[in-house]
Amino acid sequence: MKVAKFGGSSVASAEMLKKVANIIKADETRKFIVVSAPGKRFEDDHKVTDLFIQLLKQFKDGVDYQDTLNKVVNRFRMITEELLLPNDIPNDLKNKIEKLFSMKKSDEQLVDELKSFGEDTLARILSDYLSELGIQSTYRNPKEAGIIVSDDYGNAVILDEAYEQIHQLRNERGVIVIPGFFGYTKNGQLRTFPRGGSDITGSIIAAGVEADLYENFTDVSSVYCVNPKLVPQPKEITMLTYKEMRELSYSGFSVFHDEALIPAFKKKIPVVVKNTNQPDLPGTMIKAEKEDFSKPVVGIASDEGFSSIYVRKYLMNRELGFGLRLLKILVDENISFEHAPSGIDDMSVIVRSHQLTKEKEQKVLKRIQSELNVDTISIQHNLAMIMLVGEGMSQRINVAAKATKAIAEATTNIEMINQGSSEVSMMFGIESEKLQQTVQSLYREFFE
Ligand SMILES: Nc1ncnc2c1ncn2[C@@H]1O[C@H](COP(=O)(O)OP(=O)(O)O)[C@@H](O)[C@H]1O
Ligand SMILES: N[C@@H](CC(=O)OP(=O)(O)O)C(=O)O
Image (cartoon, rainbow, N blue to C red; front, side, top):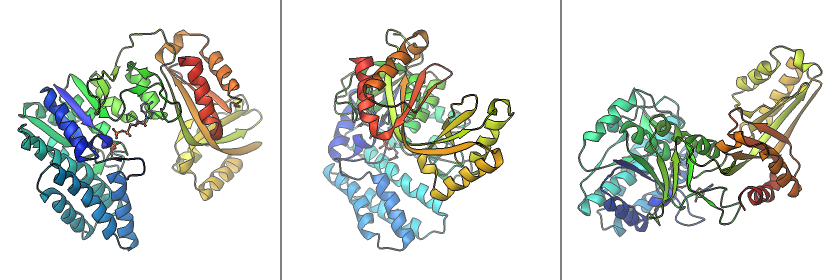
C-alpha cells in the first residue's frame, strides 16, 4: 500500500491532473493520494496559496479584492472546464470565501482557513475526476481522516494521538484523496502546517496507515546533490538517509519539507521523490540506513538571509551562564537562533535576518551590551550558509580540508565554520554575494 503526494507543480493545471490520474491508474497499490493547491504553471505565475494570502490582505485593507477573488476561482474553473467536470466545486469555493469574509474571526484564523481552501478544492476536483474515469475514489477531509494537530496558527504539528484514527483509513475502499497542508485541533479548529506543508501531510498519512512506500511527486526527476538553480544539471542522488535529507531540506533543499521526514522516519517508511512528468524514472530513495559510504558528502545545501551577532568579552570562558543569558535575550524578543559557534572570549549567534526588524535589532544589541557588559558587539548582515551533508563524513579525515580549499579557490572568505555534533553536516558562513561561485567550486571538488 502506497501514499502518493502530488505537489503544487503537479496539480497546477488540467494537463498536469491528467498525468496525476494516469499515475494513480498505473498502480493500484497507490491508495492514499495527498494533494497540494495548484502551484505555478510557468515562471511568473502565482501559486494559489499566495493568491489567497493576497486576497485576505486586500480584504483586510478594505481595498477592492474582486480581481484577486476571480483569479483564484478561475484557476479552478479552468481546471474543471478542461477536465469536462461541472463547475459546482469552483462556484462553491466562491461562496465559501464570501461566507468566510462575513464571519467574525481573528486574522490568524481567517488566513489559515482561507489558505486551506486551495488544497481542499483541488482534492475535491481530483476525486471527482478519478470517479469520472471509473476509479473508485473518495474525498476525505483531514478532520474525518483524523489529522489532529497542535494549536499553532500556520505552524501546526501533528499530535501523536492522531495516528490511531488515521490507521483506520486502511479499511476504506478505493482511492482516498486527502487535501494536504492542514489539520484540525482537538477543539475542531482548522490549522495549517508551515508553507510547503503538504509534504508533511503525506508523511503523516504514510506513517498512520503504515504504508510500504511514501511517493512524493514533484517537478524534478530526483533530489540533486545541489540546488539546480545554482549549478546547472547537477548530479542526481539515488539514495540518501532520513538524517541526511532532513539536514539538506532544513538548509535549503526546498524539494522536500524538512519536517516531513519525521513521521515517515518514526515508522521507517521509505520515501521516494519522483517526477510527475517522468514517473517511470527511479527518482531518489530516502531510507533509514546508509548503504553506500564511498562518498563522504551526498549533498551541498545553501540558503541566504542570515545575520550574525558577534560578542567578545575578556574571560568569557570563566563567566558561568554567559551563553545562557545571551540566548535568553533572544528568547525574550522571540528570535530563534540557527548556530552559536564560540571561542574562549567570543561567541557568534546566527539568526535568520527576517526576524530582526530595525527596532528589534537595536533593542537586542543594547540589552546584550548593558546586561552582559561585553567588550565588543557587532552585527553582520547578508550572510549565506552552506551546508555539506553526508553520514560518511564522520569516517573521513580530509573533508574540511577539501572544503576550505574549494572555498579559497572561489576567492571567498569564510566568516564562520560549524560542524554539527553528529558529524553529519559541516556548515560554512560566507558573504551572500559569493554564494553561487562558492557552491559551484564545492560542487567541482566533491562531485566532479
Ligand atoms: N537539491 C535539489 N534537488 C531538486 N530540486 C531542488 C533542490 N533544491 C531546490 N530544488 C527545487 O525544488 C523544486 C521542487 O519543490 P517544490 O517547488 O516545493 O515542488 P512541489 O510543487 O512539487 O511541491 C524544484 O523545482 C527545484 O527548483
Ligand atoms: N500550498 C501550500 C502547501 C504546499 O505544500 O505547497 P507545494 O506543494 O506547492 O510546496 C504552500 O504553497 O505552501
